[in-house]
Image (cartoon, rainbow, N blue to C red; front, side, top):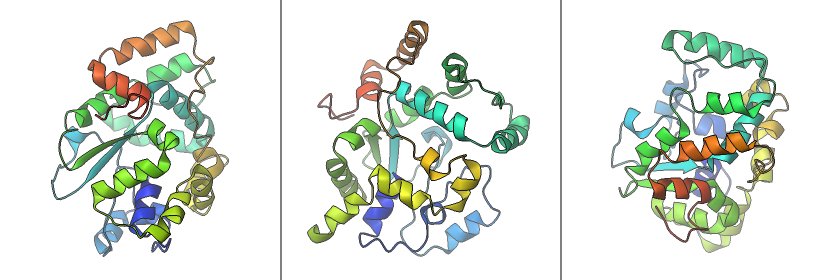
Length: 255
């Protein structure tokens, strides 16, 4: 999503810096001390990344909020990839920094078993609780929910919806290139130039921007784990759970 917004804001591909610097991840514990000073100095239209739920950040109707989700099972497989590729020293540093806050530490020796990984994904504050905070705001004109399945199915159409939401007008002749820059292959190539990704992930951008596909969980989840996923989804309102599993295009219904 950061890449999409960046491509829309600079349709000629002339963003002032790499994505990490142009769109800082403001709640990342590894941020440099000058992150907010750099952000304050920006003169272009700013866009930030956060993993924080809606009930824990300021909501200002002068801003626009895009919240992105994917099937819980796909999220689990993506987390498995991240846990495999994240350098051990990063996990250990995160555990040390968060010790005072109380979260359960990440196991630096995770062995690939998806059952304890699901426990890890669903501990403290789950993706489902996160979705609920934004789902409650879905009718607000300054909030847009986007599903990864829809981006994979119709990147062009979803980017047009995002451009409309952000009130960005792209000249027709620039549109094909604006979309092309947001393919997984192009995002991976751009990510190879971001040093911090290479430091934190074994395999760098190739690991961070992994397969980008859906359905890798099929055949990987045990029957008991599938039941646990279904039970977790049942804690959401039915329409929210259905959207999280399938997205909007498959259901022909927007949240």
